[in-house]
Image (cartoon, rainbow, N blue to C red; front, side):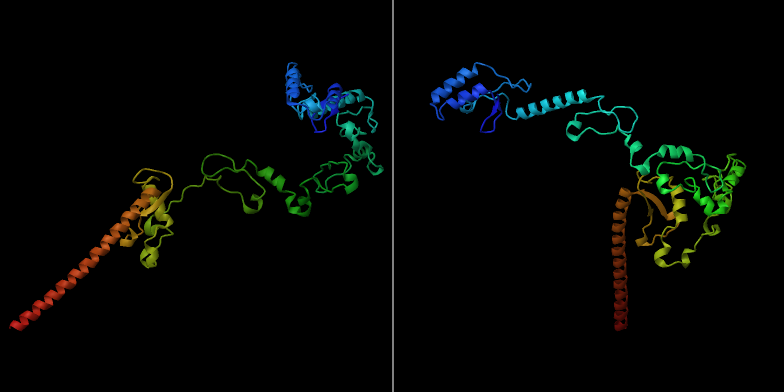
Length: 350
């Protein structure tokens, strides 16, 4: 009979354990070494089925040679238990009929040995529930077609077993709005009547799809994105034209949406320096800091890197222009002082 060692190792043979008990608690090292050499000549494999050999250790001289490698005995026990459960489930098949009265047997699984065999097949428990749920299928069949939607559509309400407890609905799903809003009853008929009778005015000969909203908002003349482009003039002839001379100084040199559209069309939607088409920005050719205006002729499209580079150049130009203006003012002041000095010297000489 296999036993478990005091140190918690795997199971051992009864003979090996008896021999181990008969040995002294402490034996000479030579005796243990000779015993290990003798036992090592016989190869023993783990009985869990893994195929690994059992290694002979010194402590096995006192405790006995185990039948399993450490922790493999747990796998062996679990394997034996699963095998036993499967055999039990196979033996129980066909012996437990479903309690609902269908005449079929309950499918027994290995886990039912621990959890218990169910009384019903899967999905059959609803057929044999407490008294207030009996005969639901029969009730649904009896009530089928007897309840019509109250919106006057003539559609029969689809009954379900839960309606016996919670009540039969008055309307088919989505039809309640027709009863509470009587003007919507005839929208479907109106849409069906006008469908395919109205075509796009742009000349594409495609029919306009009529919806319920068109009954109150009106039927459109064009399909989406089929409107003709507006023929509006440029400059003062445009209805949204604004005289920049009447605008504030900080807004007169900004680009308006109309100006940006003209600049985009002139630059063909690409950077004028590198030709890139992504991350485009509107730039003043003559910078605003040195008097640039917001007219279309002073605008261009630049990508982000080119715009950053041009802004740096414009700042340098602005700084140079400021220095030039300061130098010009200083030069005029010096010339004015020289003119006055010359005039005073001539007056003193006379």
